[in-house]
Image (cartoon, rainbow, N blue to C red; front, side):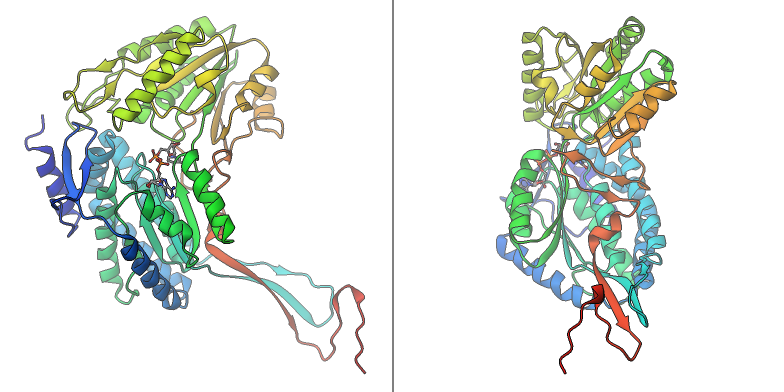
Length: 506
Ligand code: NAD
């Protein structure tokens, strides 16, 4: 039971994060919590002129921030990590209120921000370039990495803050100011994070104004970032539909893009799998965050010899999973974001049934009244790999297909547009290595004996094909936020030309 109205809890949480944003602006943009379907705030939105002014301010900030030594830039991110630790409870609650995540998932999202800050602080002393052997005597060749410019970050509703931080923490140590266009469904979390960032800026002392800014509003503000030649890199997280618009626009002006788009992630359960482990991994991967993760498991290929073992157990788990208010009930599955999500789930299930699928679950649950959309996650036994199975429906639907031949299952696994995450459950070395090989999973993330969701920040995150090809977070993803220069220095008294070319002018 909440002891106060949701809008009061929202206001108190925003206040605790230090946000000065007015939450009751007449005629402003309504922010609706999926937890109850209530409007918890109405916010002032930014205009196209505001977006332009923000880009100009960020461009000015770039001129000074790029000259600050990278380890000093890292100090700001270190302080930000400290402030995030302090604000973790409040930010986690904001994520739960706005995106409907369970408390542990809300806190987990903030933890990801803290983790990437730690990573970025270390990185600030490791922005290495190579020294390269040159063919010319008395010469040295090397590469240097320089700050790139203003980074525009467009984010989706289902991860209202972590993906921003995967980008922002790296961009800031790389010397780039950031401009954040959060989802219009989750702007409060962004404003709360920005307030926490401002505390770090205050402690840091001499950061330029406008190093991090938030633009509140709809897709038109994302378009303003996409279209501006002053935004050197656009990192856009969201649907493939959005990526198809953003990608070509940025490419047309020769800007740089990181696209983190939809997935249609699958698992393969092989005869030798540890069934108990597979069951738990699939249940979390498919039902966690009510199926609203880009890495949610949406398809499952099960070998015919173990089908009658794992599928009944999965159906049982689906039937018994708790669905409820994430703020009060301790339920594992919270709400869908809105009515449109519920409608697309219903339509996909209907289409699956028309193709011969047997649907278990999927009903709307009476939680928190008419304006909130809670559903029982659905598991669908499909005779064909077709129709809605081939696309991402952003809801908790798991399509299960029986297979007899491993290679055919692998082929079907890869026969979809999305290429984000994948899993195999096996203890057979040959199957495992084949899945990870050049002819195996074609996804950016390929896992063995764990589910498709819940990636760590240390690895590069992203996927192939219609997922957009971007990589962010760990590994060498930082390179996208910098420009590389190859330098050749002649310290001899001769001028030998490369490739033995002669050009004697007298
Ligand atoms: P969405 O595409 O509707 O919106 C995402 C963001 O893009 C929002 O901020 C929106 O305002 C903005 N936007 C929309 N149209 C735009 C345009 N023409 N120009 C510029 N910006 C525009 O996505 P959503 O419903 O918020 O999120 C769910 C989708 O995001 C799913 O497909 C999910 O798989 C994907 N997602 C991908 C990742 C990943 O890392 N690959 C992570 C989270 C979510």
